[in-house]
Length: 300
Image (cartoon, rainbow, N blue to C red; front, top):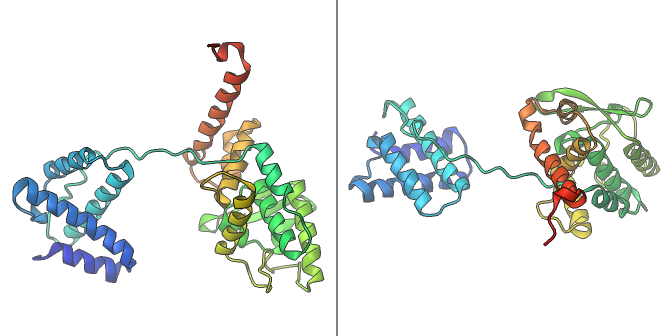
């Protein structure tokens, strides 16, 4: 293989069908490693790189002051590159696999406190079909914690107003039942009334959330709705439909819900995925403790 980087580019473009931007990012990372090899040893031969050279490269990236996420991305690109070379028979081992990567920084998800989310929802005045739909979307997100794909995939027969439950289909089409909540139930019924007045069916296998032309609303459409309302009503950054899912989970734990129950409601396969919300809950407990307990703060 005379031109390993060029062959890898073809692989990404043709077999993996990656976008132009993704391919460029991969190739930029590989070019940077190649330039490091040339400067460090006088040879830019990627086929001769071993784990010692990758370790020296990692040290160089840290010395440059790059963010951990950037370093992890570059190592990931190199790992994929050498995995390709092994498959092509150009090298025998992946030199990146023997290198201990820096730990990915953990970012706690943002959430709204009870007063904030109540104010956001109450500020949506229902005067027509559009506003009724938007309020129902917020109420359902906060009441159930469902994903945006689960919300856009809801049909009328997924809602059971008698048992106050909603059936959703999560990742891998895995079905789960979530309590609906009285506030979300009332908002949905109000939205249904406006839909029926507009001649839209609110029964059976029809989509619940639709655009103003009656077609199924897209995930992008829901994001725009949520973004517009949060931009006006909240000063938080990084706000999205997922912020409402984080809020749902955090409020459950702060209210004393069992972690296993929250896992089932969110549709997480692994409990470890849900455990990030315990950090949010613990942070809240510490804040309250420090503010209210005599031994929790020091007068200065």
